[in-house]
Length: 404
Image 1 (spheres, rainbow, N blue to C red):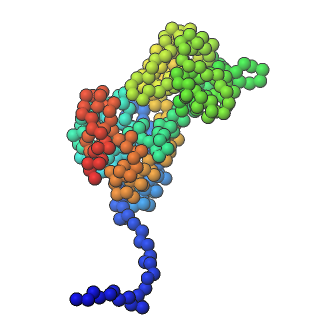
Image 2 (cartoon, rainbow, N blue to C red; image 1 turned 180 degrees about the vertical axis):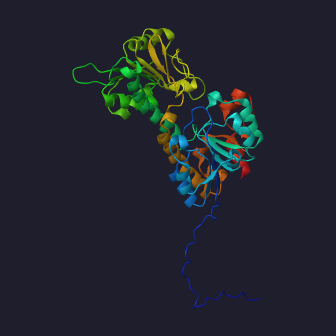
Image 3 (cartoon, helix red, strand yellow; image 1 turned 30 degrees about the vertical axis):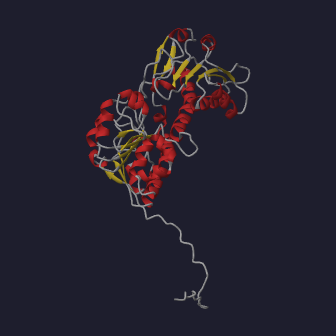
């Protein structure tokens, strides 16, 4: 049998077809709940009315508990006009599949938590309790911690913003307590012509230290920075743009400088546990009467031996004639600015989560976000927490891969 040759029709067109783009299926609207914070001294709210308005116009629903934004001077009217639903029962807000909080989960929240809920909140490892972790694991919750949330440039955006606020606020607070009205030394923080500048010691050259140094220098103070990391000291100098007096933490040198300073700021950081205590009681006892100690790292134990936690209502106490300011949550005292900073980070995250069709799809594509997750569908994925509470640790990357 003879093989037939293929026929080519003269009318056949060889023009290429238009390229068809891969269009994602339309995302489903999410339901986001924001409860009023009842935790100690928490004045912030995680989403501002502007953020709510943006989420609502993208087809998402936001439920906010009555007066949740009051401490940040955002009214219920602001939120309802932005498209949020104001709810009067705490329980109702917790029914939302995605919960956004500006304070960690506390024992009072546990009965309201839902199965398979996604919770975005701070974690405060130092005050976390095993029973809270165990309850959240039983309820198969996926939990994201503010402090560990990374962006695509590998930095921690919320921690950075809060540290910037704390660092800048430190000098405003110091200036206030050096004044005669607060039984301070009656010294103006900074310097004026013909008078030696106020001396400020900063222990820790991280973001808090850097912003505190900037504010102090801008006021005209003389600034000396201590840190055990030469890299951090070098980075601080580069960021500020000129040579500063810097030193590694050497006890004799530190004691000598503390003796003659007006303001001492503790801004050391610890990723895992307690902050190292580098200033002894003896060093504080040798400081000038009326000088001010501000321990920003008090939420992780503090780096002055004399530090004790204080509150925004009673922020200071005296010891050896030295004013101690040890409020653990300084950004909460500037709650509106802090709320806007948190909202700036979370809003794009929530919008993207909606576009990807849920949080789990988002972390499949955005690997840097995985760092913030300490619980995934009830599995504990934070190594420090598993060690601390002796709970089973599971690798998050394996969990995500097994879900696909």
